[in-house]
Amino acid sequence: MAKKPVFTPPQQDLRRKAVNFKKGWRLKLEPEELKRLEAVVEKATDNFTQEVVDKLRLLRAALEDVAMGNGVDQAMQAIRALSLDVKGMGGMFKYPLLTAFAKSLNDFTKDMGAPNPVQLDIIAAQIDALYVVLAQRIQGGGGKIEAQLLEALRIAVQAHRN
Image (cartoon, one colour):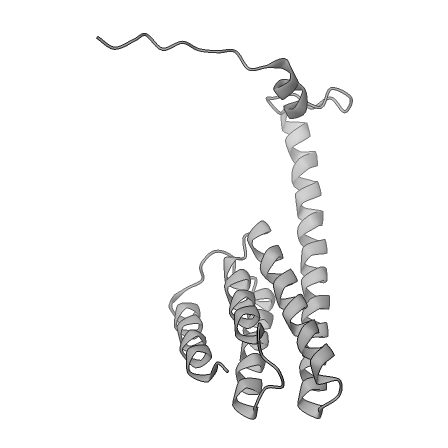
């Protein structure tokens, strides 16, 4: 014989964390409140886009430094750090492809010293892919072409890892 389920009411401290009494948010949002929240999210998305663009510019500058032989160790550290930042940001704003390409870049450069010309081309291709995803605003998993590009980069990374 099955026991009858027992429903336990939520603790008040959990409810306090979920509901902001000072600003008036209730558990069930009114349409006006929902519109205000959507505006905040939209603004955050614009800030996200600008922040990612800034990081991509820094990635491109670091790549140029590596190609020119200027401070290669610092430039490679910058590439690793920036790719990790972009990787973390992509999932938050429904850009899993951004996360995937940034992860690929970070994994590829993780233990890399000065890259050889082929490795440099692979790094450039990964950065270009990040630009395309953001410029085209490809949210979600993308399509067939994006999947093929991700797979091609995966194969290139495996073949040319140190």
